[in-house]
Length: 415
Image (cartoon, rainbow, N blue to C red):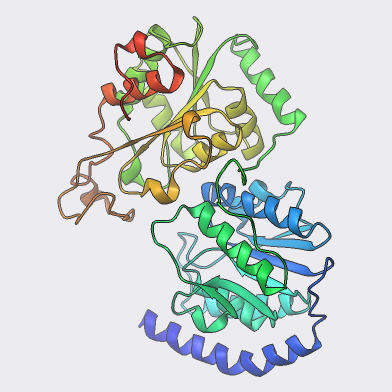
């Protein structure tokens, strides 16, 4: 029923929006020069938005006088709101990106309402940055934006004017950059220079001095001065199947404090997470033998970034804060199972970021990584790919990353 309604409403959008889109395109300024107005759409959360920032940097360099705006979810506005490339950041509670139940017609009512608002902004070019986001493609079409760039994925394909074939195993930042390059070509500009590598197109999120001062104050209140080495563990994530074991984090935290690899003596551990994840942080802290860590679960994105920049090392699973740490050029180690590291792995200098890939295929999954995150509570008991990563694997990977192989007694093999 849901699929039938979607097909019907998208057909209606094409019939109603077609003449309007053509008329709007004829009336639009249709600028291709420096003053053109560009709209970027990305509905996702923290990690995905951080991986979009190379696009913002690149577009600003190529068309420095263009007015670039972005439409994002309110849950991720803070990630891009301060970026110097953006003139404006608008929010939308995108359908499908919130867990609350809603009326089946609500996504389409919002679609037409928001399209009317965007039409008045008279954008010259728009990029639908999420590959499979058909709702966003239809929105740009109904808004009458003359040039609409995205990936050629149904059912959004008919709403685009410039399309690329989607490469499923391509890193998310590369996918974003390819779209930006195509967008520039659509307005007779030079494409972005290849290869698309993090050293050429880095992630960007810069904490403010006030956010850095907040971190200093919080740490000093715990007796942690500027000279004390810090390791941040962010164990939580949006999908429960990606979580590691609390006892595993506790053991590795104890090992870090005891051994320290090449970190100085007196290393302190900070556990971070959302307010909902605080029970997990407390469970990890309760299982530690050696040191009582600092628990932080109320910080803003900027404050978290400042904390990650202060750290010597950040540990976690596949989650947004690890990408935020990469943007701070802090050493990171991530644990991966169902998600593909080729797509969602760290976008940074290879020698500073490591991943551990689970080799345990779960019962019922055709392969690993399987790409599936939406398991029920009952199913999770049979999907333990991440949880089967051993503490020894994590400790050895940390030792290699920090240059402390001799401390851990391991060679320089891959993680």
